[in-house]
Length: 321
Image 1: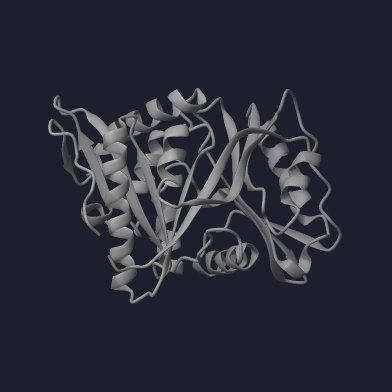
Image 2: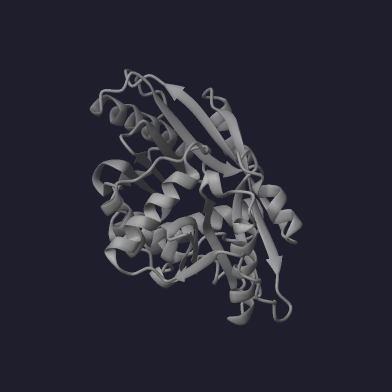
């Protein structure tokens, strides 16, 4: 791949370090505020990304500094699974810096594909629909929209009734031991298999990544069992506490053969009740509008409304230059 974009001469670049989390958070929150009107990220979230076991600080991230040594851009490349799908993110309000960072992420994505011997890889990037400069950058490099995500929200103005547990269902709250975590991971994988951009992580890596997140605790994991078999999962977090004291449902899935029994609706309404009881002002989650399950319809019927729109852009590329 021939370099076609030059970093502005008064800028420098280096790999991110653990102590850069606050600077990266400031850069990203300023960018998001300019695009959608609020930060839409937290310092804990950024710190969790940096220490994720699947992220190599030395090769997979770039922090650009301006002439005064202040952050002017940040980007990362994150390889999923066997690196058959690679996720990239570029953050900069300087078009020249953004273009240069994009080129670095694509170079590294191709490198990942070559390292694993792939004939072709898929590169994904999820951005706000309102982010016109990034939309232009991606579309100008042959990316196309593969799916659309809505951030959904419901407000809690008082107590929310606890839903009745469906007949024959056992609720398991808080999963701590190794065996239970293994079961939870299997349910998660089977529930989300085939969805846009989803690639199962090795179990140990998955556990380590969750343990590294300051806004997640294993007590926020709930499993539903039928006849002793785990069939549904919900993972909540404190990711949106700083954004208006909101609860957040990170993952909610039901095994295919157990869908249509009201399990997802129970888990959703149960989350509302728990958040309201904890004094949260509302509950949020993200939904893929092209989800093979009727998830969007469920959330709308439960009283949630879309508050943000993001698009998942995708391009298939050859690992060779």
